[in-house]
Image (cartoon, rainbow, N blue to C red):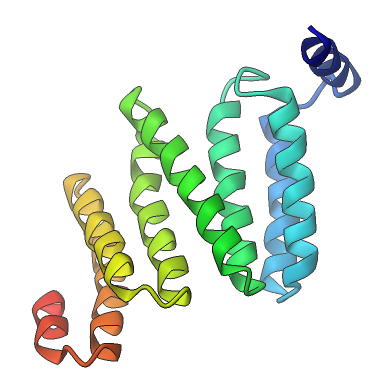
Length: 178
């Protein structure tokens, strides 16, 4: 009961919070990230995630998608900051949320599933787990291909090929590039 009262109070204080405001905050995060300010990006992403979690998935239309997106952004920021384990956790959460939304018929979330798979692969690669990263990249390629997104499948294929080359598997890398 206390948690619900606190949540209701938070919603009351943030009346007017919307998808548009979320997008403005997200754009500010992208500017920080693009300027290489990893720790500031992590802090700002955590703040936005906390706000979004307090308001919940039903705060406004699209809030569930925005929550998945901020998990993805936080994961990318943590990866950039070298916080690879924390990055993996955030990226796994993003992937799970996008998968649930896609299963419910959200078209854009379906596209984001492939991206999230690939970013989890990036975290696993940074953690020195190339076989798990390979699996994620392959899953991402399948997801992109199933959606008919050849560009995204090719981009992720390049990441997979690079991973395979780094492992001394040039024949496998060539098979991916073909």
